[in-house]
Every structure is written in C-alpha cells, then in structure tokens.
Image (tube, rainbow, N blue to C red; front, side, top):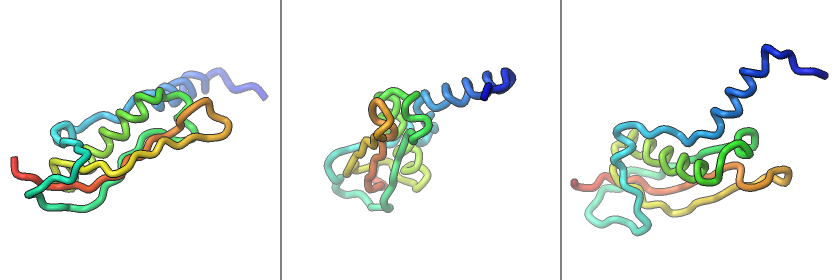
Length: 115
C-alpha cells in the first residue's frame, strides 16, 4: 500500500512535533525543582510531568524527553499555585521495539514557598 503524496507533509510535521520538548509557560519557568523537601513551605499536592509516548518517543532525543518532562512538571506546578517542586522520582520508559527511551515521567510534590 502506498501512502498518498499529499499526506507526506502532514506525517512529517507530526513526526517532527514529537521531537521538541514541551514549552515553558512564563509562570512555569519560575518554578524551582529541588531534590530535598523544602522547609517553611505549604504543600499543595502531587504533580506528574511527562514527555513522549510510544509513537513519538523514537523521534525525540533522550535529552528532550527529560527537559520536556521537567518543563511539564513546572508548568503544572505553577498552575496549582506553587513555586517549588520536590522531585521524588523519575522514570524513563522503554519499548521492546524501540532503540531507547520512549517517554520520561517525573513525580513530585508542589509547594508554595515564601519568596
């Protein structure tokens, strides 16, 4: 079966869209990620940031998977009113038919800390 030529630019655009890391919002760019639980801050809840999937992961560099997951985490934390995320775990998922990681997921607790 041959793919119609008018679909090739659409397929190329979709493949390239999977290559880029998630973009930071202005609020998300100011959220700090830390590895130790902050003191004197109010916990707002848990957040999960992710980048990639089984379809786009092979077209996305491992670096962009990690950067995108971190930016997604920051954006979501900012949406919750937080300015600090205590990162608790990171998972790089693979697929048997893939050459490397296909997605990165990060979990953390969002805090509102005094500036």
